[in-house]
Length: 68
Image 1 (cartoon, rainbow, N blue to C red):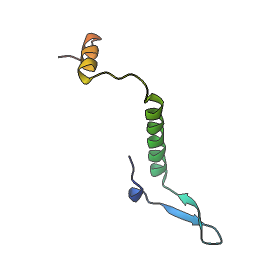
Image 2 (cartoon, one colour):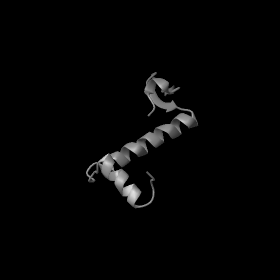
Image 3 (cartoon, one colour):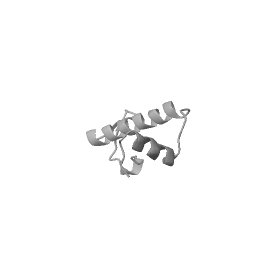
Image 4 (cartoon, rainbow, N blue to C red):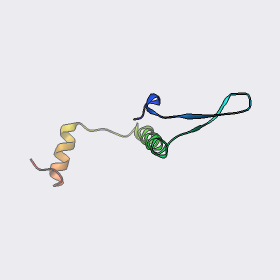
C-alpha cells in the first residue's frame, strides 16, 4: 500500500492559490487504483465466513492443490 509521503505529487492551484487538482505519475496513479480496489474487496467480503489456516490447508490438500 502506498503512503502519501512516497508519492511525487504536484498540485494544481487556482487563481487564489488554493489547491484544485493533482498531477501524479501513471505508476503512482495505477498503484492507488489497485489499493482502492483491494480495499473495496475487503469491505465487500467483510461478512463472509472464515476458516482457519489448518482448515484451508486440509481443503487444498483434499482438492489436490497442495502436497504434503
